[in-house]
Length: 119
Image (cartoon, rainbow, N blue to C red; front, side, top):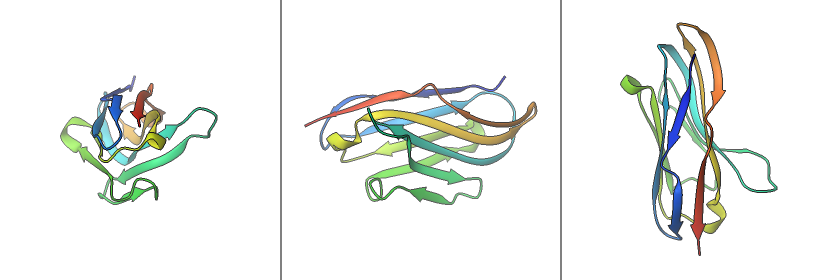
């Protein structure tokens, strides 16, 4: 069974950096996309950044110029480098993977990792 394991969240001061990672277990046959979403208290989950199998990236306006999404195909891993963090970036960050594994099509979420940015 496919599983997503996230790491890298934590507490950081405004202006600091964090790097989130998400590793997908299982035998991936074909990647469609990987992405990071976030959900702040009282708000809907929103896209932060995504990357396709071809390497095309998409960023929320709030993330442009500060965040960088990347992937390691050999390790089925996606990273989110977050720089110049702001208090409004505080949220639970979720990894999403949409791919074909040997066991079948998978579109799932990680367990979430808390990012807290203090002012």
